[in-house]
Length: 162
Image (cartoon, rainbow, N blue to C red; front, side):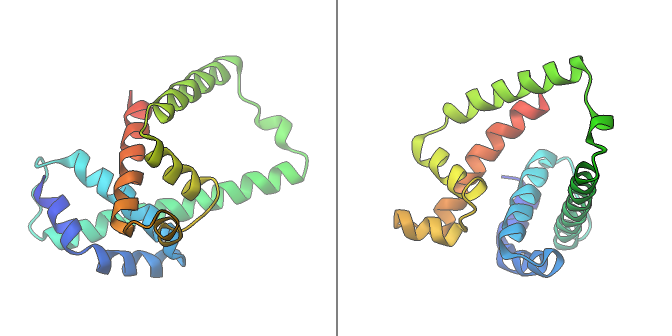
């Protein structure tokens, strides 16, 4: 495990509070924290900042900013669709084929996951349950839920990066 992921784990609760304030939602903060962990894991030991804690929080802040931007884009797209402008934003055939291929690969990697990990992923991402609610349902710790989510997210990330 890299130094940055160790710093992340050591300051996880503080980072979660920080992200909760940035995003306005504990659930979104957990998602951003997971994205932060994935990003730090990608860096490995290639990055050696002077202040590791500050660096981890900066990465997390950037991910929260990206989340706000993505939310704004989604709202804008929804408004355009509601105004009937959606036809002007149609993807071409090549883009549609590439997206369908990526979706098939994502579906395959999701179905290859252990049943519990897939259930946790679906309950959180599709049903909107919090980590705590899922943990109570399965009578396991929130940390175990985070590990299940991380397993699935890393597998999906590998497909998207390929």
